[in-house]
Length: 113
Length: 113
Image (cartoon, rainbow over all chains, first blue to last red; front, side, top):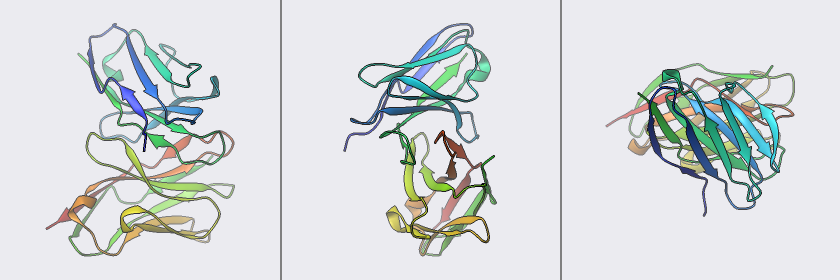
């Protein structure tokens, strides 16, 4: 079965650079969630989209922005990167709103030097 | 506000012995609860979900969990641990209205040969 695809799997950047993370949800899933998992931490919710509109916002820094496109894929744009942004970034998708289990990708590991 | 508390950060069991991973929740509403497993450098895989149907929920790989409203608990169990069960386990509550996930702090399961 198709799963959530995230790219790239690994990304190395330097401070003050920008990064773009991509997420391709499971086909027919119209809701996308982004989470950030710091080293040894539990995942923290960043932002979500339903039908290409932002549906909720969590602890996402102002330096970050995201959007969902017409084909339902989503991109997380990160600017002025800081050392503390080093983390595993997960994307999850689900069909519609409501209490549907979220299906997670394998994540993008972002390392800031 | 909804939250989950995982009572043990680390659990060690011998192969072939039962597994018990404890989770308590806090919610004003009937919660939607999930257990996910995370293997190193991998995404989160859904083990099982509770969404106000049967209180005893069976999941994949022989895991099950029982929702106990009187104890506000949703503990994860497995009769016989396998080496491949060694991983990080997260108890998750889906926030009412927004459906974003709120994660527990995780329990690292170690299985001894």
